[in-house]
Image (tube, rainbow, N blue to C red; front, side, top):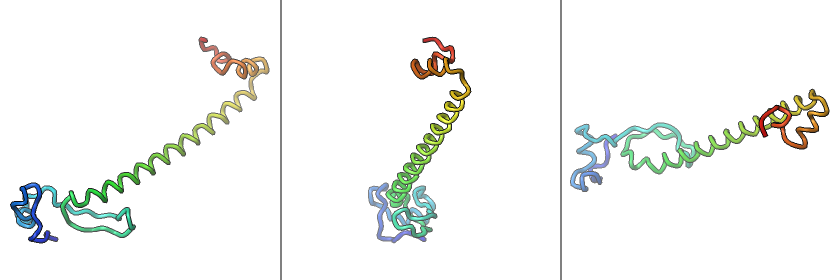
Length: 115
């Protein structure tokens, strides 16, 4: 749980060992991280310097951003499909004269919007 006594802290100019700082409860960067390693899928449950975990956390953050982007794109595609279905239903119920105006000039003309 405590760091190796030979490891020196870069934030003290390598003058103090990490173990000495951690044992005095003076190190805000000594944290416990639990979860799954995004590189290999193995469970992670260990104490260490937050700087040493930074690479793993950045990889996890990138994966989450990609998943969020994919979910947003999927939601957008569903909304486009739903809007097209609603527009098709609305067009089917319109008189043919208004339908021709929409096909020639766009929906704003038939809906009375200023041109």
